[in-house]
Image (cartoon, rainbow over all chains, first blue to last red):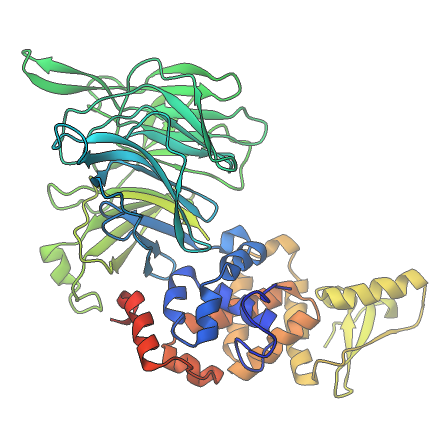
Length: 411
Length: 164
């Protein structure tokens, strides 16, 4: 059944009294975040969990609905502090090793993260470069890294042709990554930074970037997602973001936020304008946007596209090019702090930090220890219901959802 | 074991390793790819006799359990794996057994090529492993700790958060 021969020689047994192929299956079915801890059982388990076998067995034997849907959180610069994966089904966390350090740059922020299969990609971002002048001005990065959960290693990949952070990026067809727009703005500064309008496509198998038609204007801080499905042309959508800076009274720089979306038709390599998605008075800028890919429904025109704006959730309606109110987050955050917003397993996760009074309310529970406590309010668009969970993060570093980067991964 | 049926051809007889005979409805038996293959082969030959399938690797108490599982799942369509009632039943079914029984059941499911039962058993054991401490795992599965104290400390450091 399973080829575990590379890890285990004939005389050793993973679990006594059980054939090794079945033991390998059992140990692989243990949810991913627990694998690291089980390495300390014995030498054989350590080499088993250090090998490719567990994740490849999961992929060959488990239906995709039974795979672990993990949230991958980058609290800070991933080369300085570990990213973490979180399994909401088991309330379990596991650290990933930090990204390789480039000695000349520091404080990477506003990068894009996405996953294809068991791989997490970290694309671009904004950094301080000790070789640049002036040193205290952030510059955009073109660097691309991939973390392979199968073998547990970071690999540097071909850099993008144009350096960019705050970019729109999305995986396409399990083989390509499309990026567009972006700039050099750093999370430490609310304004300034360059903007670009170019777009390019990465071929995962060939490790190559190729340019495609650029956005009609400069655009940074935008969000990107792909629309694909059976019988439908592939499209890369770019929504919101800001263009050229304008000044108030010729002094104060402010961003002009886009209210529209641009769509790259992959087949022709052409951009299509979608027009403004809301009126001036509705909202100043696009909120946080995530998409839900519906595995069961290939015929649908678009994945479910949702926006968190303040305490409200909106759903994008393509026919009318409008955002329609879907639901309200049941519990608001304490003033000033912001929500994290991510789609996982067909549900929308609205994540906030529990602080002060809210924390003491649950002090009788097991969460009363050091570390950040997260409160996740989870919305299921299928039956329009909310549920929630509380989890204590294993990391001590502060988590700020305005700057933390998140993506999801299935293993 | 099997529900009554009009024709004798709709049933097969399965023999356990300790020579007990089980009369099984064909629909139930087809949950096992091994039994299904035997039945298909015999039918191709055009036999009208009752089909006897000996299973040399499965004892009668384990076979009883496998057949109980097959009987339940035969009532549901293949794409009904997400049926909540069935999931609940599966869980209650496995919950009753000790580790040795689960072990034998896993091996029987593998031998009889009943993939859904194999996956179910493996996932059930895996889920119980994740909740155990490393010491408990060694004790229950009779695994020897072959690390030196220094090696063990090093590994714990790598995964420090999990041991707090």
